[in-house]
Length: 115
Image 1 (spheres, one colour):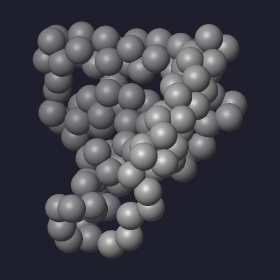
Image 2 (cartoon, one colour):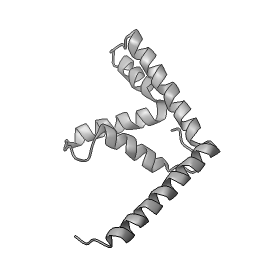
Image 3 (cartoon, rainbow, N blue to C red):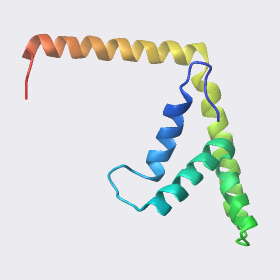
Image 4 (cartoon, helix red, strand yellow):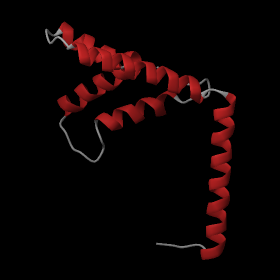
C-alpha cells in the first residue's frame, strides 16, 4: 500500500473499503467479504490486480481496460509520491491551520451551540 511514513495504514485501507462498501448500504456478509477482498487487492496491487484476478477466473480484460488500469496505477503512485513531499505537507498544515482559525472565528461570532 502506498503511503507516507506518517500515514495511517488503517485509515487508508478503511477509506478504500468504505468507497467500495459504504456503511450506509446494507449488504450481507458474503457481499461484505467480497468487497473487503477487493479493497485489499486494490490497496496492495491497484487496478491491475483486479484485472489479474478476473483473468485467473477466465474473464479476460480487454486492451482498453488494461490501458486504463495502468493509467490508474501510475496516477496512484504519482499522487502518493506527491503527498510525501515537504511542500505538500506544509501546504496541508497551512490549510488545516487556516481552517481552524476560521472555525474559531465562527465560534466566537456565533457562540457555542447545543443540540
